[in-house]
Image 1 (cartoon, rainbow, N blue to C red):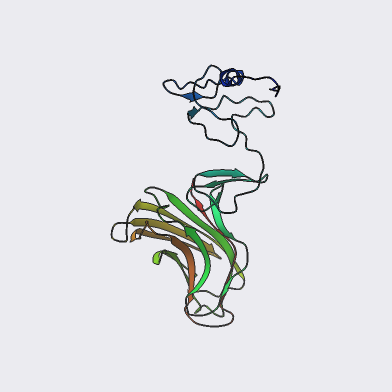
Image 2: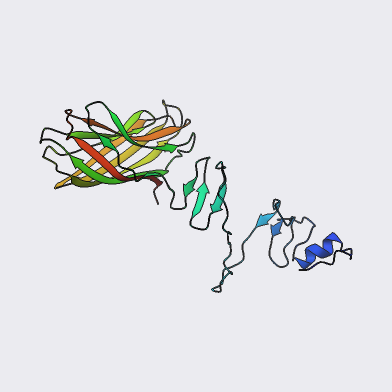
Length: 253
């Protein structure tokens, strides 16, 4: 609505023209025609409840539309953002794509020794792990060993606690494709004495199909917990390697 700057318009008249009233009544619902509540137009907070109108099929008539813009330089808890290519939600201070996937890796990583080698790391923030919240780690890649004696154990480490393990079969692997999924569910929150997680892992590699379950492991949900894939080989050899081509962490649907 165009406003003549030379003509004084009282605040209530202006707000009525926007279908808002400045008076706060019981319930304080805004903004739909006939609603009452407090509102500021611009970069200010709504102080009443916000109820979106029903959507319609026409372009630009969805109940809620985000315009494309730059993502925050520093992620801020409680925000929803749209950069023109994807939606993001930040439940703590760790931004996640709207699929809730994050910490993705597409760079190839290789482990060749018996010493534990971290292939990939994701992050869960302090107090992000809530009761009944389910997370999934997915990944795929290639594996190779010098002989059937070369076995790789992949430990899924959550904040220093191994919550699941996956092991390659005792067969010769030659650039063998594999993929895996690990689900973990938070059963209880708190420090290491009370926090609990259960997990299930599965990996397909060659003709091997492995499933592992850990009913309960102790974790501290009150601190930041790195989620890491750590590989240990049964024997060191230059031909013993695992390459992760894609790995990511997400909150499961």
